[in-house]
Length: 507
Ligand code: NAI
Image 1 (tube, protein in one colour):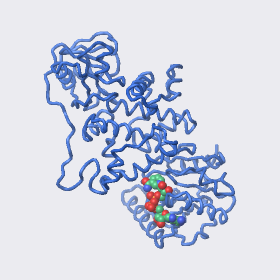
Image 2 (cartoon, helix red, strand yellow):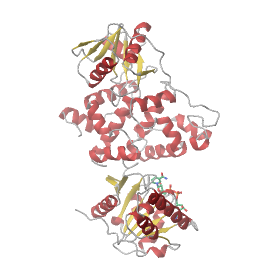
Image 3 (cartoon, rainbow, N blue to C red):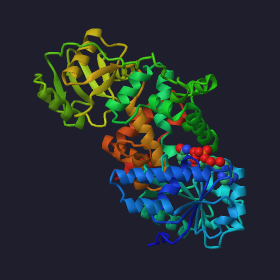
Image 4 (cartoon, helix red, strand yellow):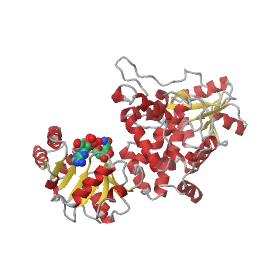
């Protein structure tokens, strides 16, 4: 197994901004002498003063001994000249996100450091291969992509360019692990793992919003309360900033030669054009001015539960529904699986979405009173559930279905009849993108799930989630979305197709 760099190795960090300071803190805490360099006068010294305050705070909280905090602080030094970095065994670059500027810096460094020195870049979007092209020896360059804030976020993507020597990537992997991080290997492709696989989380929500499926507050609430995501897509985009989020989407889309999978949203373009950049500008999808209240999600008014509830089959959704009805003392009967139906009552048939609209499903199954429910991460614990109602559905039957779900303890949000609702289509597309990343050799299945759980706090890795939903169901949902939109965007990953035919799970 490849060894981590010893703590005797001097680590140089170039760029003392948000990321460079965080990386310097991590390396110093791990025992390295760290030389911090920035072209802005005083930037490195100021960053070091800030890091020392962090170490003192950690000592005050008992996370570090006083001595350890002092030692870690004293291992940091500001170096005004690039030539001061000649003795570094590892250089981590965290300067401005610009290919030419990074290339120039690395070729200057190449002339300075020893042959054995590893060069790493924290770039979040530039090709490692392209940065390396400016070097005489691109084999020693790799991406070492930390997440913000670096001292707190566990994930590090170790990114290999076309020329990167495997031992270099392996040494960085072992070193990141020795620094207390959870590294994953990735190939240099647009967005690496996280910034690529996360795209559908924003893209599907923007699509649903564009098509009038529901408002932002309702969709956010469904993603949190049914999907188990920590933040809904709209509040998250507002927090990231639309300028940043749109630029990443745009750059991934362009880098994939305009693949419709990644096409940006006109709504987000409008927000950027308007300067409604999110929280930082006081307005994005939401209004952050002091007098603006937070909008509430649309929640269906209380309805009586039907007297004739039947729950069908043994699916996880059915078992959770029974458990919840029992807990609320709602009378119901059980029946063996009946096609794809989950429950019935008051004339309504309730099914879990398979990616069709309720109207299409009603038509194709000959069941006019069709109500579809969304995917939940855990049907026994979800507090809210989105539903869609077929155009053919009798309003009294729709109310009965809502009453049935409310009786089971769900707050119900009735969306317009969009295909795949919100959580199901999002999870299907996340799993699809994760599968394509694996299929194209960007990373392995374990890495993609680890990366998404640690890099963006997903409640479940997309491939494990796809397994839990059932890959056949994911394929069906994607197939129906592709049919509805007639777009290549929803094409099913060949790896999902393969796993369905091989009856194999990812985990
Ligand atoms: P920042 O703007 O906070 O800091 C960049 C620093 O680099 C500044 O202090 C600047 O004076 C310095 N600098 C610029 N050109 C230089 C040069 N030629 N030589 C030495 N110093 C130079 O930027 P931030 O956010 O820390 O990002 C740095 C890098 O990390 C970028 O490549 C970015 O894409 C990447 N990144 C950023 C993340 C974030 O959330 N901010 C997350 C992961 C990666």
